[in-house]
Image 1 (cartoon, rainbow, N blue to C red):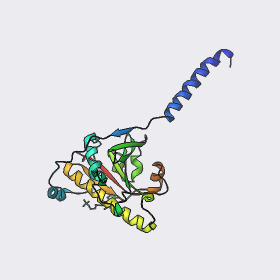
Image 2: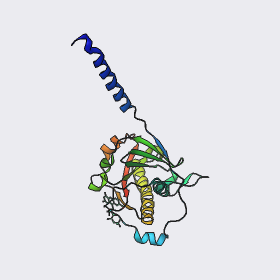
Image 3: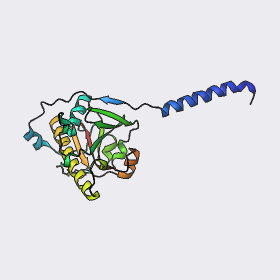
Image 4: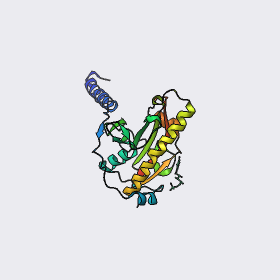
Length: 218
Ligand SMILES: Cc1cc2nc3c(=O)[nH]c(=O)nc-3n(C[C@H](O)[C@H](O)[C@H](O)COP(=O)(O)O)c2cc1C
């Protein structure tokens, strides 16, 4: 190696270092959702008639206003004066968090701000379940119970109540999807340990169920 070649090597090293640093420093973003439309939708009895599980999805993404309405219907705040939600929760613990896995990364729904906060920039859709449609559907909701919000109850109680509370949220999503012509299926088939690791969950956060949402396959 001659002395003359040092500057070129240094330049390459500096470029490499700069690109690695910027990759690590990739910024996580928050998305302010548009206000949910609290009127409209199809009549409840028609929606109940149409509710069903689907396992064939188009890859088309949901427009932001539809995502906004969906998350509000799922577990948004419908009584801002008392900060209560569209689904009931035992003891009003409101212990269920909705994570949204998309091609653009993993987001956490913040009901109070009606916003999505990015947790990861990686696409972890495939990790939300072993069924083939999961990785290509535009969105997988992951319902996570925060046991830290459930007081001094036994593990059994916490498992029981968080399972029941997710059921109400999941049904809200089913009904919204039936009203909007979207396809959905709630899923217990989730490999919880690797998914919790990928999502950087705390030990007292427990994955309950996942729910795939998208437009029906043509
Ligand atoms: C708690 C729960 C877990 C479920 N887990 C899965 C699942 O892992 N994968 C799946 O494809 N469907 C799953 N389903 C959907 C059921 O298979 C579906 O609801 C059932 O076959 C009845 O069909 P319907 O929803 O169209 O009425 C689950 C449903 C519930 C309530």
